[in-house]
Image (cartoon, rainbow, N blue to C red; front, side):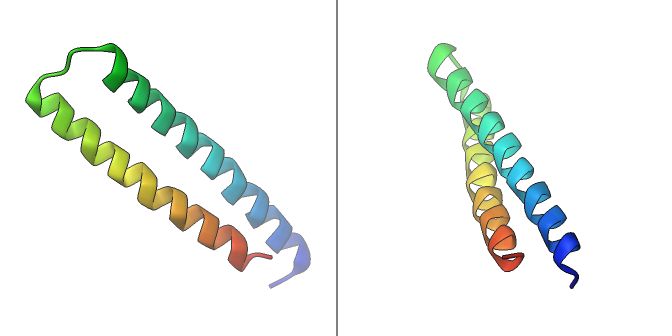
Length: 66
């Protein structure tokens, strides 16, 4: 892979990490600041798990571009 493409991909993965972290923070704030139903809590927990997995994925992909 060309060096320029790797640098571009690394930047993109870093941006995705930031976006992912912000969504994760927002979901955490929703949970802390609002009374949620059982269904909403289940959805929030699923979203937290998703954000955790995608965060690890983006870090691994960024490392592959190094």
